[in-house]
Image (tube, each protein chain N blue to C red):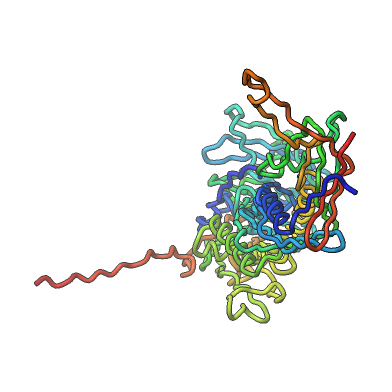
Length: 324
Length: 257
């Protein structure tokens, strides 16, 4: 029979979980070059909500944790191809060879255009996961690993203090280790495609003179909409292309999966128990000596052994032995 | 993101309305037909810039049959002033064609071509005076309207060139009724191609065409079978190429009481 048994109700567990979730805020930016265009992102997000369900099979289900984007900025840079007049070849009678005329281009160099719309307001995602309780023992006498396994999270999380440095004393860490994670993919609505097309059209139009000159240039490039689709190599709707960019090319889904998995499962413990555990704090008393001189009493601690944590559909139960 | 490039609009393309074979500018190309193998000097004279000398070798075989030389690209501001900065050699096959054009800028150029491997310097081309028989002069017409091309040497041969805006691109289904946008799945009409050229021959009887029709951005190539000096001028601008007027403000004064 365990020397210590602590029961944490589902409600209390939810409060602990909420406190942890509230502090998970991430930010990342990157750019990729795709040749004719470049695409980058600058994202900032946090988690909200979520329902906690302690289950009888010793697992915990976190349902519908909202991924809230504070910033979901996409930067698209397009390299407009040559826009030229003239050129072409003519059949000539012998002995003159068939001749090809030089073309003359409208811009001195291939112009670049760039847009950076923010689509945070248009994206809503949820993440749910089921995990089991994982108990780890941190031994302060063992040197920390050469490579910090949570190092990438420190760079990613806006509040890097969420991940504590390695403690200088032994501890038991209780983690919620996600085992299966369901995450909504990025799915941009139609309006996003329209916004991108409108922004790119405005950017292209801004570099082209007006009047008949614009009409001629648009005739040569086949219309801005076609030009955009050709440069971006989009066979379908722009919003679907953008969803693929976020889900696959940018790797943001993988990033979120790794974030959730590592934060809960490895880097941030739900509960920490010191070993030895202080059961009575340090105290200064004047009741011991006849002359009532103050006497400092050291804290009373007990060593904790064989700590386990289990879950049923009502509470989480933590049990441990006391002793050397 | 890489820093934004400084892009310049080639305004000369849209502003030019007259062209002359004796003064090559943007949108014109003079093509000289080299019929004899040998070593040639090509002197490039331009307004406001130093003269250039290009060396051109015409070989019996083993060389390109056409080269195009951008005269505007020859000028290097950091070079010392003075005549005749030699440039690298060009090679061309006998019976090949060298095209001289200006890709940008407002300069005008004329050419003098002679052989430098003979005691007597024979002038094969002096474009300031005339285009010899066998050469070609190409003009890319961008501004919509009615042009007149004439041979200033004979003074009597003319051809009319009608330049129109290219047709607007349409799809089979037309634009979406609600958004006005074309769907990616619609199949549009072929895209307009400016790289189409029309050949017109000038011989002792005149031009072989009375009227030529082009779309804006396409080229007309004059094949001169007699010595000529060609001028092409915009006679009547199309309404669509006029400068759009600003909005008009109408104000009515109130009657004072």
